[in-house]
Length: 271
Image (cartoon, rainbow, N blue to C red; front, side, top):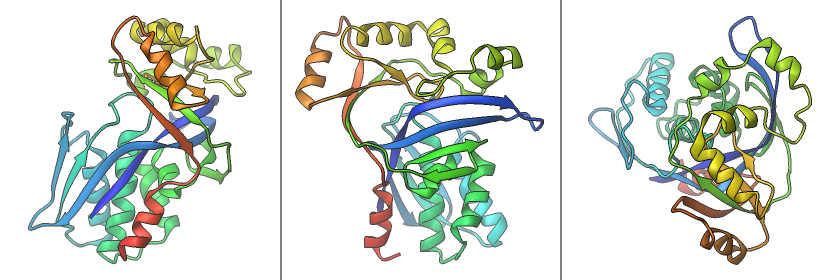
């Protein structure tokens, strides 16, 4: 079985406060893009997780973590071979690892007939990563709290040009840089990204890409970076912008979508 694991972008991202548990309360609008990773899942004699194109240790791989949690809660061995055809760069703010974990939780829950409710999976997902519940919900949403409050939304679906600078940004480092003083001084981030200034001040490849896009459009950074995007009218417009790039940079021209393709894939697979 081959299933989608789509990327997301943040249409906006605001940090409201630091919580007593060390996390932050956020308010963000999330939307899927019609591009991302693919996961091939097959029964196996033992659990095996393989990642193409990127090197990710077993300890860091959220897919392995997700399955181990399912095993612990269900009290049964879940032996599957999972091959991740990875396109979403690490540390890009596009939610690749969280998306992979959500795809596996939904798929294995169905294939192994574990019968966990979505509510139960959301709780498991939150223990794995703050973005996992959004991907489990499979719909564009306003996300708040530390990621557990999800209100499904319908946003305008548009064509976007997404730039992927060769720069990996740690979400932990980004959030660790936030102090109460920084939050107080940056209270008005509606329709903006709270991390924009921090990312641009600390990561030259992102700043260069941002400044390049500013010549054509109003760029936005997704999540804690390093990816950034602009809304465009057509594939041709996006291609023309990139034909003017002063240096080689990876990019994707795709569409924002409100519903994850994973929903239909799971329904049509019969699991």
